[in-house]
Image 1 (cartoon, rainbow over the protein chains, first blue to last red):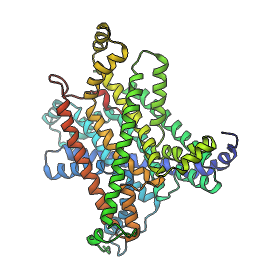
Image 2 (cartoon, each protein chain N blue to C red):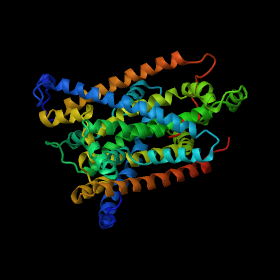
Image 3 (cartoon, rainbow over the protein chains, first blue to last red):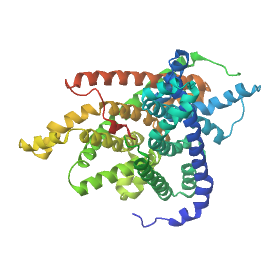
Image 4 (cartoon, helix red, strand yellow):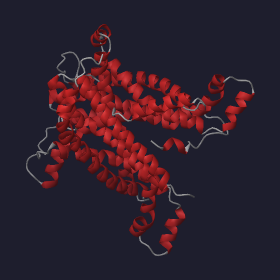
Length: 230
Length: 250
């Protein structure tokens, strides 16, 4: 069964797989995580405000993003981003956007909805009395959020945020549907060029598994260390 | 914007010459639901089995269950689908591999199997969390009454555990519907694939994706309300109300 297993093809394509593919995957994961947490926190703050013109659109956005498949969202943005770019820059034609920018916008905006739910839980985990105390000290809303609530919310939610990042890392493989050369895309291109589907897909699965598994072990260790004893 | 909207496109005949575009989308919805429901049966069955063996006192069974969950949770769904679709037939004996490759609707069966196993790992986590959230005394009381361990699980522990984890199971069920869109990569003509096909033939990109989005939202709403009804019907008086905090992680 493994008699004609060709390890040579894996070794030969390592530079391509990691230098071209994995770099794309990791860059996309890192940037989309930062953007997603930033916009997610904003969305969570909007959603928790008592002001309906802010909270309703935020709730609608989060629920919309959470009820459609990521693949469909990737297609949506692939066609939508050029038009958004045209609208933002005021150009006369839809803008040509590269694969990386398109998928970065997609993943940032899609994951923002999921990060928003995590941050909402984090903000709600802070006792209400702390907000009241901050206001009694004369702090503004932004000061209360920036100095009191958000630092604690981040700390409480750090393990969950990192777990979501691992999910995001696995989800980036879906840019395959746009024929982008991420790690899986690179493996797939070699697999089809050399007719070595078995070796390349097994190797890709192994690499994804090792990275995600080690990352989740580290998150579990972190979780024990940052837990606040109450 | 220089995009030409044409909402009438849904009633024009699609390239298959028989159905309108709207009908092709509805056919796709049928495949999405068939895939999700079949995969859900597999996920619930395997997930319950693995979740239960991880709460038994047998060390090796627990380790086996943990390994199962880690493997299916740490490999992206798309890669798992490729493994089932492209790699498995090559690793089997030739006659079995050929039989798999020539199966009609092979992409449907592959999607069901890969989605089912992928989701079963998540269901197993929930089932385990649900069982562990019960008071330890419940299991002991069941054994003290003379029930075997299997009977204790079937009649005492699982009925309560399932009720507790209904909310997270609902989101897993919604996930399996959404994740079935990944199967378009192995050629399953489900809803997202049909929307993409409609876009490719008619160039009405945004109409096609809007229709698919609306259908997904409707399915979501129906499932959410349906599950709320199940929750109300299955609630044990004096219990529930608060889902276990343990179920919230991953």
